[in-house]
Amino acid sequence: MPKRVLTGVVVSDKTDKTVVIKVERRVKHGLYGKIIKRSKKYHAHDEANEFREGETVRIEETAPISKLKTWKVIERVDTHATPNHA
Image 1 (tube, one colour):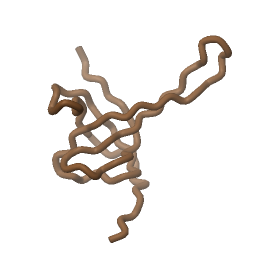
Image 2 (image 1 turned 30 degrees about the vertical axis):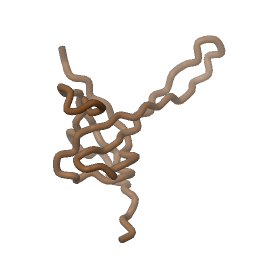
Image 3 (image 1 turned 90 degrees about the vertical axis):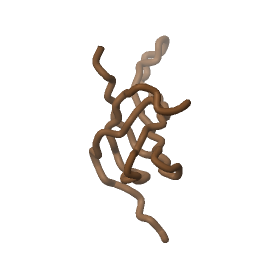
Image 4 (image 1 turned 180 degrees about the vertical axis):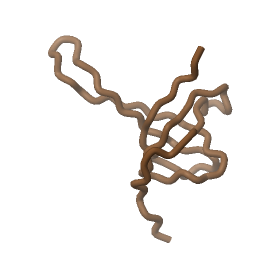
């Protein structure tokens, strides 16, 4: 069975080796037919802590790494990251 691959935006990079990805999808309402956005957050493994908040990334399904992490980041798609204010 092939691994699922999703594209989303990094919404949090505060934990070590973990990023939270928000994946949006558009669905048609069952009764009214209007197209609406639905989103879901996934915790993904980021071994080198290289991905920052605001970047668009591609994630791939893996064997469970922890209680919440069953995805890993495979590549950066776009780099519209928020600047770090140190």
